[in-house]
Length: 104
Ligand code: FES
View (cartoon, rainbow, N blue to C red):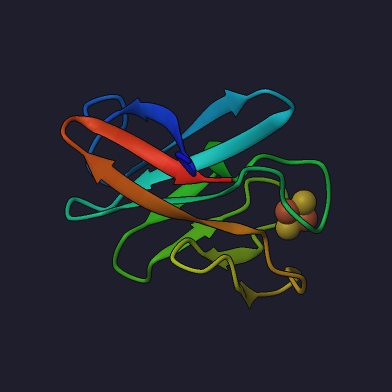
């Protein structure tokens, strides 16, 4: 049983960048902090905005929502700054060869 779903190639997300990927009905945000890849739900829990379209801060390990500036830790999805309160879901990631895989 393979629990890992192929998401993207390791070179599809630049260092320090966040990028959206669609898998079936899911829209995921992948972050490459230069060392590791992280994947969270792309839709903000505060409103209708995509975290992949906001600022990715690899010093603080947060994504800043482009709409109201809510902050989410991309390592675990936790809300880190107003008006974000509810976490976004985060996903386990496996890098295998040159592919990034997620456990959905
Ligand atoms: Fe993301 Fe409001 S929609 S902080």
